[in-house]
Image 1: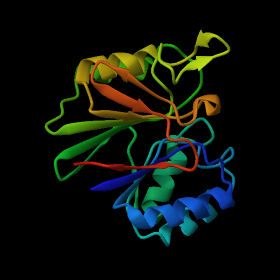
Image 2 (image 1 turned 180 degrees about the vertical axis):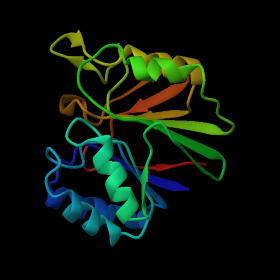
Image 3 (image 1 turned 90 degrees about the horizontal axis):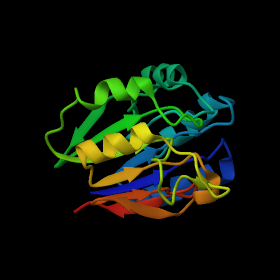
Image 4 (image 1 turned 180 degrees about the horizontal axis):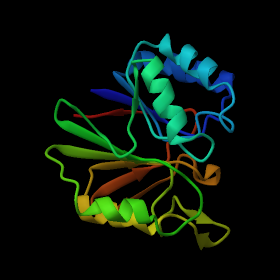
Length: 193
C-alpha cells in the first residue's frame, strides 16, 4: 500500500494541484493539518480533493478546527477525521491527534495515552512535532510537544508524520525505532510493505 502524506498547504491551489497529480501513485492520502489558511475556502479545497477519489485521513492544524473537519467529513464521505480516532486497513492502524501551537504539554492527549490500545502496526499522525527532535528545533530551541513524544515512546509507532514548523519541512528523525517525518506541503509518497 502506498500513502501520500502532506502538511501545511494553507489553501494554496497550485500546491493542491501537485498533490492531486502525485496522488495517482497512492492508495491513501494523509494530511497533518493546516490544509487551509485560517479556515478559508475549506469547501472549495475539499470539493477539489474529492476528484482525487481516494480516502483522506486528516487532523486539523492551528489554521482550522476539529469542528471544521468534522463538519466536512459529514458532507464528503472520503474525508476521515483522524483526531483521536483509529483508521484500520490491511496490517496498519492510523491514529491522529489534532491541533497546533507551542504548548509543551497537551493535557487532553496525556489523558488518553495510557487508555488507548492498538492491535496492528501503528502509524501516528499529528500536526505538532515531538519535543527534542530535529523536527521541533526553532531558533536553537525545541518548541515541540512533550506529550506527542510521550505517546511515541509509549506506543512505538513504526512511523510518525507531523508538520506545523515550516522551517523543518522534509526533515526526518527517530525516537527509538519510530521514524518521524515532516513531509512538507508537496508531500511524500511512502510505500508501506
